[in-house]
Image 1 (cartoon, rainbow, N blue to C red):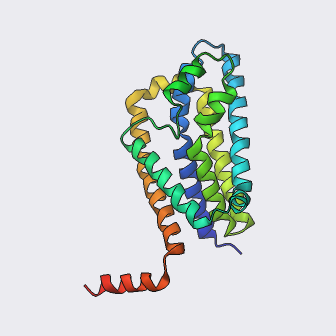
Image 2 (cartoon, rainbow, N blue to C red):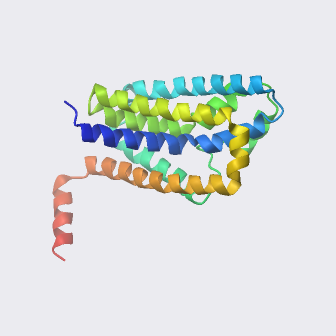
Image 3 (cartoon, helix red, strand yellow):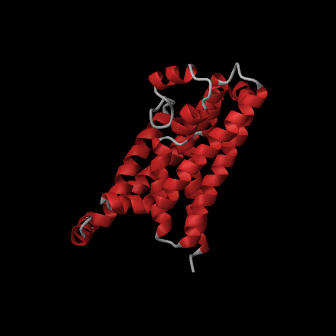
Length: 228
């Protein structure tokens, strides 16, 4: 039976990671700009459709991520290390309040999106909600959950659905949220979440390196450090 403490830790880690990589507040702010001229009904329908598509895409990566890695011949250690590095780069951008291509559209993508009538698939579903960082995080969390059992996988899915529920709620009130928080408020929240994501990213890297680190070398290094 899976340890309840381990499940709780996984749930908190999954929710924080999805919240940071999806960036519901930033997505809502960008969405408010894109739909400024749309009717209230059209905004609601677009928000629901875009969130549903992004959720389905992320669920595919959560449920089939480990199978995809095996098919591509990628080891879990390599995925943890590479994913941790990418998440760390995203966290650094969040702390310094800089736009990142991993969680927000590039300038070219934003210009293309501005000329579209229907934005539920692009850029709302992807890359705004289900961007490269969120998809990579989904695979990483799925791999960790797979080692703990079926219940742990359900915990990751529940954390994803919780973040998607928050995302949909913020999209539905995007205009008011943008007016209340302003740029400063959004940056403060982004920096706090970025610090937490940076710590999680470094832990992913440590876990990946420790898996392939030669035990003898690791013991020798530990002995050398403690003898000083």
